[in-house]
Image (cartoon, rainbow, N blue to C red; front, side):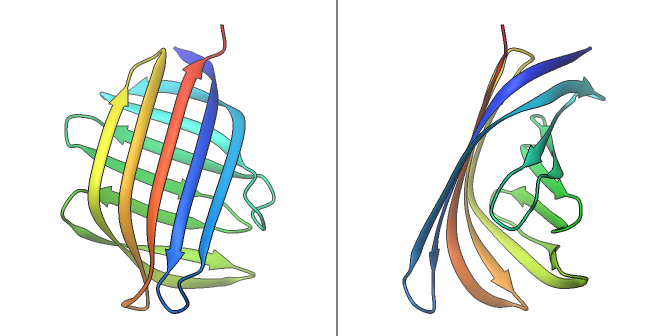
Length: 143
């Protein structure tokens, strides 16, 4: 069964090379469903430069893992596992860059009515530390 949900996404990052800080907030509607004991959250990402690309979150409560995938024009793959460094990619204008995510802390709460995801992680481009990040995603059914 699929539910329509309202999703609030907040991202904060501090860039290592210059200390600049950036914050992105968006509220979107999306779809939520459960498949093979994992929750899937699908929405159109309206972050700057992403042009509403479809994003998919796979929330695995048992394994305490989060997978974020995004389609063109800015493809992205990030996998978050606390205490682990995972490889992924980030794309822009027909180029893909290798990235790695070092997940320092992850908190996942999800059901078919509401959920909250919080991740603290470091982002590496080409094996070089680029930024320290905090991602918060909250969703609830639209009824």
